[in-house]
Length: 63
Image (cartoon, rainbow, N blue to C red; front, side, top):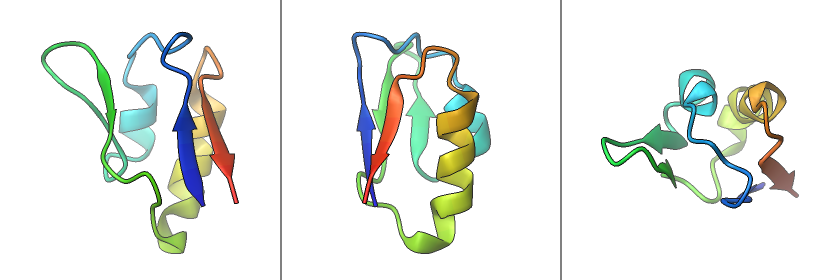
């Protein structure tokens, strides 16, 4: 699984970070950072939840 973020759409609202803090981080500069581009399968449910919660649909997964 590969996490892809469209930074043109992303508002860095941290909903993804709340769902999967192992993978997403919004830092003090108010930008989203992907901590793991290819997270392990045991994080799939959390990452899928992050994708669903993104209000701008800026996150996608590639298998």
